[in-house]
Image (cartoon, rainbow, N blue to C red; front, side):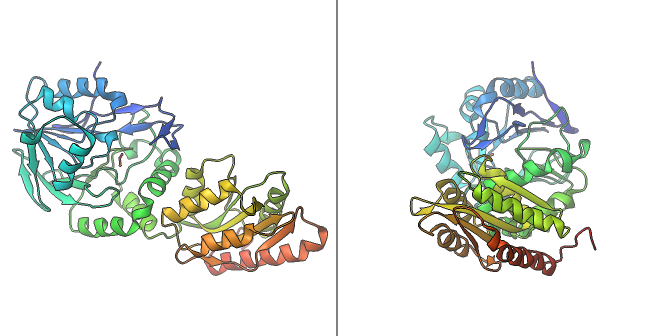
Length: 409
Ligand code: FEO
């Protein structure tokens, strides 16, 4: 049976949740599921904004049919052509042959790349800033290229000042019955997943996000409707500020993320000793991950959140442990930057991991290596304690220099 929610008078959420999918994009674990949001405006003309993933098509089409209540669908706005939002275009055109598909030149190129059905007579191409009158409401289209695909645009509804923002401001996590961010404790329920979504899906395109934020800054926006995650109708500056900071690659918080590869526990031992010594100095904001255990997306999200990283890895096959190498490559691919980094290496007969990590880190922008990398030859020895203490002192000094205030102060 249909399941819809009213956003405002005559605008309805007609999307759905998927709690069965194991990995979003077949890559990112989503233990709390994911929501695919689509919105239907019932004015003198009807307009559907984006569709949903194929996994929830049956309920989705029932939702659309229910809200339309026998009326035709006049417009389908395609803000983003990624298949998790476009799986139902063909069926909608089949059901509503007069529907105009609203998009830009790239939108239609991508429709023809992904699908084989012929709907060219349904195309309604719009230009930057163009308006579309629905009756009481008028939609206006703004292009947001590479946030995070080239065809992306956002749609602004002028009467109620709603921004339909495509993936922007989205989050992993299915709706827990509620729809609006103010109906839940957002920081507790969504923030980590919103950050993980942003950093891993959109994070590479900080410059383009900054350009989009600048373009939209002149609009009076009262509500943000993304295609994933909750709808924002209150305290919009909170999520706008997060996006601004994330896209400038600035840490949200002073603190340390320690992540390591360790085959037999010796590198892990050093990482635990570093964290313990930092804790003794009063540092409380720390996270530690084994890269072979925790999915990279979580580590990347926390690396984006915190100011300092400690990275540890053994040498492997005369290079870097493969899982660590893949993670650092992924971070570089996401344009990760602007952090302070301490390095810990381990080797038994050939010292290769530290130069490999240093090379990967230094190829990222605005990264600063803290102190001297700490290396152990198979396992740490007591004679190395002063050297480790020096690195911990350097990390702590860097934290303080960045404005960290610990509990002892
Ligand atoms: Fe949710 Fe870029 O698609």
